[in-house]
Image (cartoon, rainbow, N blue to C red):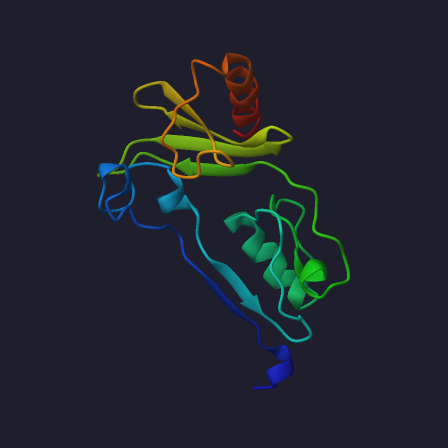
Length: 167
């Protein structure tokens, strides 16, 4: 094949607990060790770079289509990052990162949202089966050890509304 028409995309669909949050596997929670994954692309004409903001797995398909000049369907919710990879555009504005884990035979139903502002990188986890919320500031607490739900009630209400808007 023509090397100019090949892109390599490396990513994972989930991480592993490895003892964090008292869990050794995947599929039981939405903590960072399970949802923060690699997303590495090499493509013709794309210089090596690390994007400063978060991207989402929903950006994979639009970006791959964009790398080859294929129009991205309007129904896609992800972003085409190809112009950013080529250095022809600035990193797009941050938007919420959405996590959706439907109930399965071995896992609970969980949804989460990560939204950044001047005060932090806020992550709201909703344990739907138990109707319980947890709030973490990933900037100050990257290991998600301090639940701020009771202290940040206004922020929880705002993030709950944002999460509901996506679904």
